[in-house]
Image 1 (tube, rainbow, N blue to C red):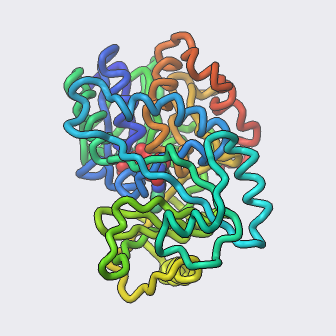
Image 2 (cartoon, rainbow, N blue to C red):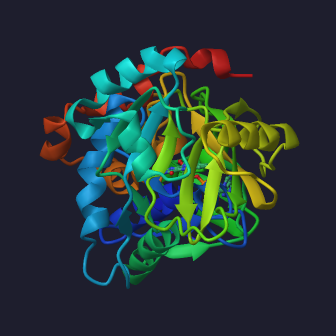
Amino acid sequence: MNCDLAVIGGGIAGAAIAYRMAPHCSVTLLERESQPGYHSTGRSAAGLSETLGAPAIRALTRFGRPFLETPPEGFAQAPLTRRRSWLFVGREDQRRDYDALCAEAGDGIEILDPAEAERLLPILRPGYAAHAALEPKACDLDVDAIHKGFLRGARAAGARFLTDAEVGAMSRRGGVWQIETTAGRIEAPVVVNAAGAWADAIALLAGVRPIGLVPKRRTALILDPPEGMDPTDWPELDDMSEEFYLKPEVGKLLASPADETPMTAQDAQPDEMDIAVCVERIQQATVLQVRRIEHSWAGLRSFVADRVPVIGFDYEAEGFFWLAGQGGAGIQTSPGLSEAAATLLRGQAWPAGLAALGLEPAMLSPARLTTRKEFMP
Ligand SMILES: Cc1cc2nc3c(=O)[nH]c(=O)nc-3n(C[C@H](O)[C@H](O)[C@H](O)COP(=O)(O)OP(=O)(O)OC[C@H]3O[C@@H](n4cnc5c(N)ncnc54)[C@H](O)[C@@H]3O)c2cc1C
């Protein structure tokens, strides 16, 4: 089973790079699970914000946003985005974070009077917010449709998918990666490591220095809105210091304590304590009385030390390309990241649109992680 490019991981990152590369070369996508999207991609909160994360994340989000708002013909049957403003609120003691948000977000946010925040979100507890700001252009994403659109487009361009194909060993011989999987051996001169929380585990299998990726658990719950209230058009409520968030989710409410518990890569499960913390914070900030948790889940958001994604060829291991460390923004950055990654894989000129937003390949490259040797066992 030979191909030009093997992609390890069938989440949003692997699907998007397969989509970008399949028109140009033969691509095989390898996914350990029986369905792609079982891990982080299927567990997100499905939001897009241009104020979230490091400047590199913001640039990638802005650059890729037009793809999500006006996808190519045939990519999806219905719109992939739905406008949902983000309402940031903070208590008096969160003044510093409020100032930092205002300074970083620039004209992406509007300063709000707390009374206006209470009007926009009728369940916000009166008097809770001492500071408020609104990001009017944030939106919800249809993650399943975006993921399926990438997969369908890649397949239409000739990409081959192997599910139940866990990569268990890798070696490089004669300029070709020999990739042993539970579905057979694949040979390819170039491999893309898009294995999410397992990206460092894949590197170790290949004898490549890890990048110090830390998977961090995040919990989410589905709650009932107060009786008789329809939350459909409410803004998402975001704590100024990222202590919780609450957003409408198909007639219900999705809440998260915005937890970041470091752990090894695994099928993450929610922890009772995080659920309790979430309920407490939501009940402090809103008038919601949580009587029942309909459903809860957890997923991993994986970061390197500077919380910027890692994209580019490894500087020591020939033909080994990193596409990892998307943290809490892997869905919203997927069009931008995959376009950037495809130009690097194809040796093309860096997109002018990204350069105009202040982002250069060196800022994403694994070569910037000078402490990598520490992570070798
Ligand atoms: C609760 C929560 C809320 C979030 N909210 C948002 C949000 O609002 N907006 C946003 O943009 N992002 C959000 N994220 C982050 C986003 O979900 C991730 O950044 C993104 O899904 C990462 O995609 P991925 O393809 O890298 O990883 P994954 O989806 O985890 O895919 C990696 C794949 O690699 C496969 N794999 C691993 N090892 C092997 C192997 N040895 N062989 C073969 N296959 C292998 C895995 O099975 C997996 O399917 C959230 C995440 C969580 C957990």
